[in-house]
Every structure is written in C-alpha cells, then in structure tokens.
Length: 209
Image: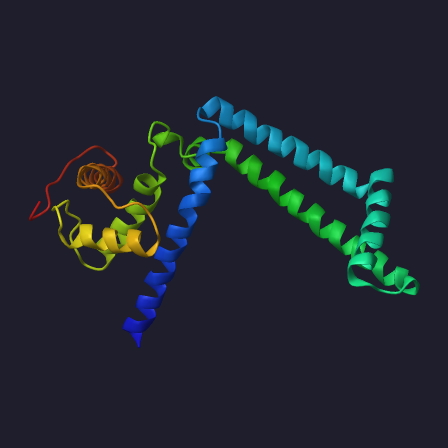
C-alpha cells in the first residue's frame, strides 16, 4: 500500500510540474527580465491592489459595486425582485472576499520586495537568457524525484533517466528532449546541488562520481 501511495504522490507531482510549464512559459514572455524592472512591477501591483482594496471599503465606489453586483446576480440567478435583501448580503460577501484577496496580494508583494532572492526566483531571473522553461523548471524537479527514488542522475544517452524524461514529455505532449540539452541540464543541476550541499565552496567527490 505504501508503494501505491508513493506512486500516486509522485504521479501528482509530475503532473503538476508538467501542467505548470505552459503557465511559466507565458509568464516568461510577459514578465520583466531584469531585477530592477521586476521590483517596479511588484511595487505597482502592491500599490494598485492597496488602492483598490481601500476603495472597496469606503465611499461611493463600494456602494455602486454593491448595487451593480446585486442586480447582476439577480439577473444571472433569475431570483425574484423581493429577494433584494439576500442579494445585497451576497454582494457584500463577494466584495469582502475580494477585498481580503487584495490584502493578501499586498502582503505577498511586500514579502517579495523584502527578499531579493525570492523575487529573482519567482521571475526566474537567474535563467533570463534561457529559452526553455522545461529545462529550468521541469527537468530539475524530475532529477530530484529520480534521486529521491534512489537512482543516480547521469546524462547517459538513452539511459534510464533520459528514457524517463522522454516518457514524461510524451505523456505531457511536450517536445522530444535533445541529448545535448539533456547533458547540459544534468551538469548544471549537479553544480547547483553541489553548491547547496557545500555552500562554503568545498567540493567533495562522492564515490562513483
């Protein structure tokens, strides 16, 4: 049972990463490509979210939205006019929920602005010159899963890891991986893992490497 549970868990992780690829490809096309531009972008998001949240809590804008929201819901749900009070309550709830989400956006943007590393990671700025989200987002996660399964991450052409990637690409309707790109990605992943394990810069060769 434990093995079946583990299979389901890993399958869910891989599926999530595969489905995330188009989202991050779109983000990379639209997002700022420099650290300064990213900070400005996040600051704008925080500013406008904070302003909209304030407007939704006070003044005529809130009243107008509540009225329009009530009428729109009545039309969509075909409720009788006599139920206006319940619609008003529903409208207030919707506006309140939206305001809460805006507060979370403001809070999250503020957290990004306080942590340069998180900001760089979110916009994938460390790979700004890379064209493939697949090699910088998907493959490293698959390498981690492969290693967690007790297998060795190696760039052997047509080896078990390459066949595993090929299968994921085939099931996920992704382009067929190239051997040269695969080799470079494995080398980069090993360098990054070495840096994480030995942040002081010391390099230790493990048995079999």
